[in-house]
Image 1 (cartoon, helix red, strand yellow):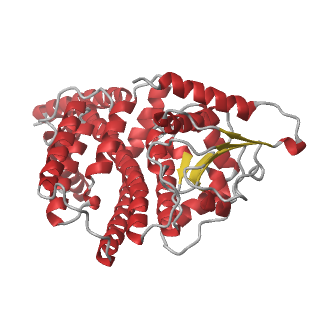
Image 2 (tube, rainbow, N blue to C red):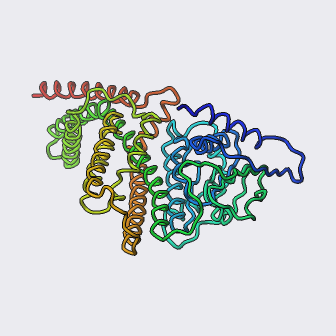
Image 3 (cartoon, rainbow, N blue to C red):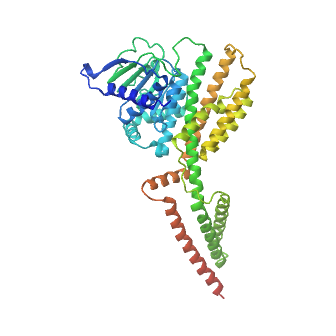
Length: 478
């Protein structure tokens, strides 16, 4: 059933309340509203509200009673806008991991400066970060240090126009917002069910059918850890998507670079080596000419090897890597399910690692069907794993279960840190600098690699002319 019209109507009603001009003290309003009757509407409507807030340059708090809705809301957010939205679980250590991941995701998207970080919302974000440069730099430094017990810089929540999290965390961050949506997926404290400090308008979504929601209740440590890992698993999937996209972009550019440039450079280096050899022959006792000839020969051999290593690749890779939003969502959802750091044992980890490798290969190839095949393999494996225990009563949570979940959270944290390190290494490479320059040139209507190719062609023609001249001169000498 298509719920898009209901989502649109719900969003329109909320926006009407948020943007209404009401004569009240200090311009603040508070209103309790009913939840949509269809439980499948609420979460996508909240994601659409986040997009509207960004489009209208308004800050937004979506305040929940607990962490239950966070993974669903995060999954529903527009992928292009996700780094502008801070989604944080309530627990301190989990919240800090998620905060560092979101900072890294935002930094990466700003560095890549691709189509998925363009538009008014991103322009406003860049301007905001320039105005708050000291806080932005302090936040990045805090994220890079990765010290578990270190408190994040004061006011860090203000960096993000949209913030989503439980009420206790929202109160701790104390970041004001233009619009506030309170969600009673569990019982919110009375002091929270009031106009939010500094907000132009506060709406409270009354208890109702919320897909994926649970009531706020006393739960055991194991259940709490599972809920936190679900949120952290979402952050991990986002970062795996960012890394796979950056790697895919650079891989495609590298192939195009070698097809357009590498052969020309190898030819030029070979011609220059031949020229250096002729000059040495004309003055065999000259040590400088001998050294220059040796260096030119070594350079020619190296560039020749590099060029030959790409001969088996496609002849035309000029098409850039630009996966669709649907493909990105497909990869992200798959990574969240199959990631090796969610494994329960070594056999499970080996199986997940194989699937993750296939998923990365399919994503970089832009092959949605191959991603579907990976998902099918995953589902088949899950069914086989469940068949032996069908109908069995789940075991009572134990301290060992909690310990395993803590280990899983630790693995997620380590993988997030490894992704950040890999992105920093990738963005710091000379090849990525060239890629970034080529992207800027493309936006200016230029083809940087073709410009480089033309210069190389001119140098090759000049070297051929000089080599021909010296060869004839050598042949004519007595």
